[in-house]
Image (tube, rainbow, N blue to C red; front, side, top):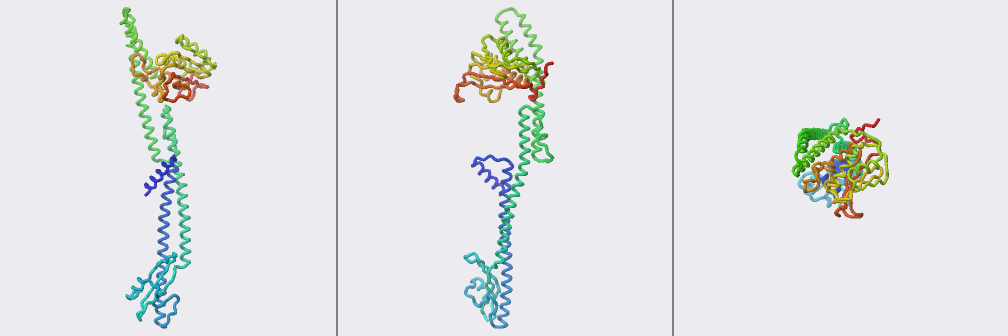
Length: 448
């Protein structure tokens, strides 16, 4: 029965489009069950009380008709109140029992709701003496008082159950919300957060089991990711020496087209190894920003001019920032390289305060990158040959995180155009923090 009411409540809330919390669902469930139990108990108590009163009234009528019978047989006169001989209104069932020589009582309900109590006894002369009384007003008053008390008690039970449900559900809901917030922090990269510590409390329930399971899963995933990072870093480190030797040997080859091809592939392999090592260092969260005070517009203009003379630089508003110049240059170069490789000219680099934008006029970023961010070894191109390894934007995002900055990506479309409209270009936006990064996993080294 409890499951039926729970399903009924859930269906009603779904049809109404209402989203409720755990505390209100638990309170509603307790209130419904409490109301059902209160109604059933009230009906049982009411019926039991009424049956008991009727039984007492029938016993009293039976005793009174015996007294009336003895008086009649001793005096020969009918001198007892409400007693009659061969009453025509006597119920047929009671008359039949009396004519069979049995003393009996009978209860009947009149159309108006009143209850009649009959008692009959056979006389020695063959007649039937009966006694007719009604359900007393006192008994009716007692039943009404009992019903009123049952209604008040039922309301108190429902309200008390609802308050208890809100209290218990609120405590459980708070613990679950704390667990969800801690799990979101872990998902955001805060590996030192533990769900069990976040929910706290001295109560041990299923929430603690869930927290321990999430913490165990988090530790297992961290260990696995750390093992994979170490393997990647070790492989890249071991490849650095033979790749360097290969590049040196290729430079000693005689000039010609085959030598150019070997040198080109060897340089690409060395770049890949260095990028993999850099990604491994960024993943280890051991990188620290070395901060300096620079003029952002002037810095970006000089670095963009060194990257290529065809890059347009617009300094809309100059700003003095405290950041890591080497990492900022790395991010800027990777964004420009990505725009040149996958987009189309003109490439425009703009500086407005603490915001740096790199925009091209190509087909735009792939939807997977916009939805989930840059991912290593994924370029968004069906043709992988000569299109990079997907590490440039991954490194840019990692270096921005070390600086305490935020790197976002979007596609540029005409004003008012829908999402399905082809993009007119891609824009990568670097948002530098107003203050030195202190809460982003980076511990900057301030200059002397």
